[in-house]
Length: 471
Ligand code: ADP
Ligand code: MG
Image 1 (cartoon, protein in one colour):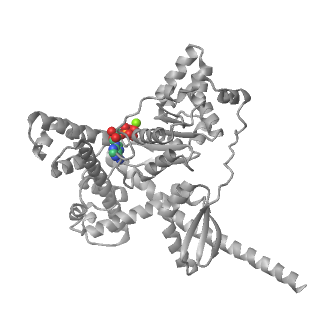
Image 2 (cartoon, rainbow, N blue to C red):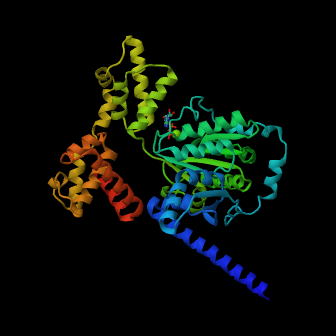
Image 3 (cartoon, rainbow, N blue to C red):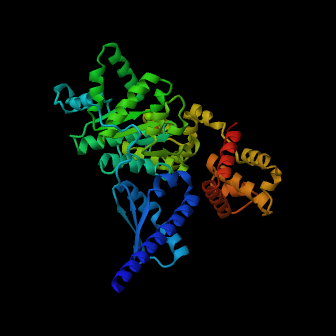
């Protein structure tokens, strides 16, 4: 009898412990959400579950290896310190992978019978289907040649995972502005797969080419073989999917191909200049399917990344270029990497022809047209003026030493925007804010970054100001 009671009490205690653990971990999660923002929360933090706490180790589980690796390198330390701060001693955070059932979409029915037959038929014509539909790949676009920075590391890591073919996000949606390396990463993943697992059939093509082939198949009444070609691949990569916005029948066809592949557990990678949620002229079903996996954003480059890309390109081409010339390019050509490369190539070609090394002066001369395009660049003064107007403070408050919050916050916003939108160094920015130290600027920039993560209104303010400043 006692035994029974004890067992019941033990079970009750156990279940209480479990729910305390779950509750505590929920609190940690909501702190992480405040700290890292909603997007990061949905992608990485929400899927984490607490499964136990013993020997001072918190055990967590996540659905895929990719999420585990990312959480481990980006959030585990923070989880540990939040736990420590709120709930006491903790030595480690262990993360295990607990595969959940794949989320079944509303429309996930088994593939129609005839399609299955088509997949299974060892048709000779299908043997090279992937290669047939695939566009040629650029041999220079490899992972090795891709320079990483915080702005692109998620996209890079996800593309690598696709190449390894193990627990990769699916679909992987690479989002980023022109010339930031979306195509490069797709080619890199496709080539890595072909090198490592030749049996995996990879098709890479632009959405435009997809449409062109579809229309051609319609005309020549070969839509069945068109469908088979695509549905026979293991990895389908479609570049620049924004192209099919507003093109209904192509979208419809893509949607069916997409579903057929996903339902069979095949890998899909797409790229676009916008996130699925921002794409117009696209059906809701396709939009939600596109965003179902991971949307990895490639953010604009920083000065440091541009400089490393230039150094890496020089090394690849085995060319020397004076350091100050590279610095000059990195600071003046900020729009996209393609233009940056174009500028570098032009300088190299000129150095060859003229048989002289390039100087900053000759570079400025040779690149006049490109530099002029970038010259309408915003200045710190512009930013200060527009931010002051926005928050209804005086321009002179940007330079004043007063630290009252109603002045300090707008000033920090202006510091943050100056760092983001101009090429000035931190000490230069500091001088323009009444001779402040560069550490004050760093502090201001961080503060606004934090607020943007935590506070929707601040994020909106920043977006509005960026638009106003861009004119
Ligand atoms: P997107 O498809 O996003 O418009 P691309 O992939 O075509 O951009 O990139 C444009 C050029 O810039 C390519 O030559 C590419 O190799 C180069 N590039 C972009 N990002 C990087 C990077 N992080 N490291 C090295 N090269 C890059
Ligand atoms: Mg591209």
